[in-house]
Image (tube, rainbow, N blue to C red; front, side, top):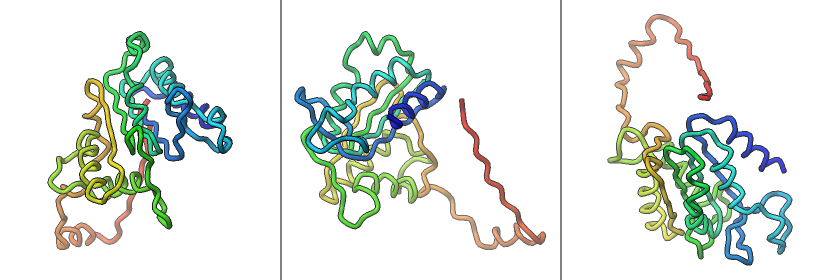
Length: 209
């Protein structure tokens, strides 16, 4: 399964922070455990999905990353909260500085995918917060701040309210700058920087091992 291989490879290669983001259908098996639906999953056959416990064990047993972030945008994703720290023996085998699990809905609630929208309600609100920023928030948007903002936003819109659980310093993992906190550059200053003739820009990408 390509998705499983991608998660396992990312877990093996990441050295700093590993982020797993799943957006799709969430199923519940006979033991009331969360199962993630993949492209090959057959309707009405939960056994053809991917048990979330598999993802959890890969992160705990096969990842070298110091921090783990799991974001589940699917129905019943809150079920994963009860499994995040279950089994102290497994957790003790992984030297994880911090972990954070963000679920789009409670364990008994379905997630919302508005008709005609590109993203689900949860992913749409998350992207909006990262792109536009959080007014009155800190300079860096960490997972704890993002979670509290999403709870207030989703509740105000009458949408399913996200759930979260963190270990150690997981909530302090920053995802980026708060765009609502960035200073506005004066137009005159911007124009002065271009009076030399031409201005060139460069985009650099770097992976952190």
